[in-house]
Length: 242
Image 1 (cartoon, rainbow, N blue to C red):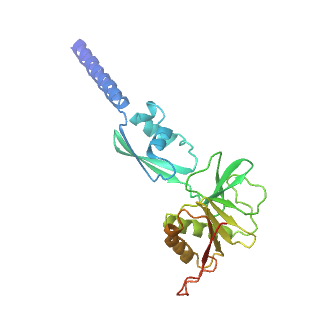
Image 2 (image 1 turned 120 degrees about the vertical axis):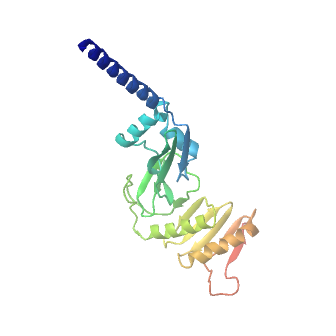
């Protein structure tokens, strides 16, 4: 009887070990097959996928959960953080939280990108498409993750307002230049657009958007600094280059 009980015990233990082993193999063989990326604008979904899931182990569901919960996330330029959400054992969604960037300046051979508060959030050797270069600002020593040291801190609110309006209308500019008075000039496709002060900027950019089809292919300067929304007739001019 004791021999039978001992044999039965060993069989049960063997079955339990086998089940655990098979379950472990099943879990370890679970590979993520579908990856959906959301919240990304500066990177394509394929780029984000390749930056986070670099090898076969990264695509293993169990290891992915462990890595996401207990290890530091991959450091991706212009990305604040990301979150991996499992929709099934083989399907995940990667939610990307990008850094807010309104412009960049050229400094000591690098491109320094700053946010709406003037904080330098990233340094890069390349230019990021869709982000305007800001020139004319006076500043001292620049450090990453520190405010851009300019005399007039309000300039960043004006830059934010301007870049948001340009983005809303889908207007791409190469450069935004500020003079000593804080007046802005846009550089785009052979056209200079002198905007002047930040007053009535919404109307100025709306007017620019209406005029762009007419100005296509021309070279010169559009003076919108005299724009007045109270006027019923055109209050600005375009001067062609000689």
